[in-house]
Image (cartoon, rainbow, N blue to C red; front, side, top):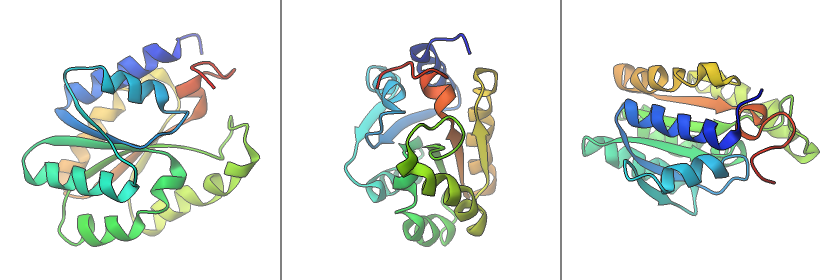
Length: 176
């Protein structure tokens, strides 16, 4: 990959804006820091940093009820804490939810303590029948819009999973 990671973050922000996302709720994550910074500094978005993943789910669900496009941005481990909130709120009431998650524990992750996320994230998504798409190449960033529209068409949540190599570069670019 030759593209610089801040450019990747800008492209992700551009793609979100192009599909009508206005509110972005995020939790701190070092892989996502460039995306969070890009969204935070972009006047096209209302960026709401939250301290609990459930808050991001609630904000994005409420934004939908107010006819505002939204996205929740969090790490894989954070997602694992909100299964009940998603299945209770979004599945029961058919409220679309667009999630952007890190694919921790997968190839390219250099932290052994994230291996459990790599082992369980996709099986958990499959267990709750949540569609997801892995984005590991800058050429596939345009799939964000398609995935976002899918949530609206089917009134269900969907996640895009970003790899480390996409967000931070194959050699650790984009900060540590």
